[in-house]
Image (cartoon, rainbow, N blue to C red; front, side, top):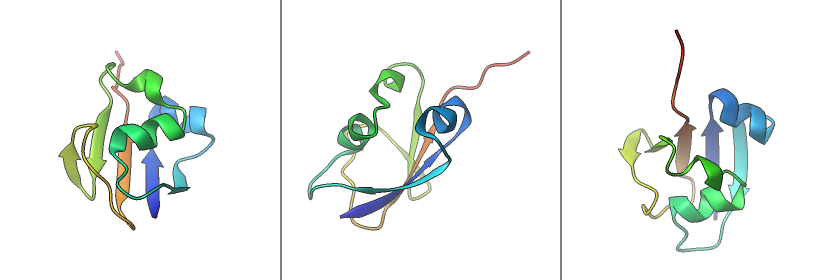
Length: 77
């Protein structure tokens, strides 16, 4: 199955862009996706995850055609 991944902030820089199409095996979870793209170091550090516009946790299953947005925590002053 194919999903669309949207990355923001420093995570987009790390992944080399904001939008990515990712091929995943059936019955994959958000966590599996994050590990596949090499962003697992963001887990446990305030990463917000949105699946088709709804906030979810990393154990949420994904389906073909889903859009997953990965939003790292924002800091500033």
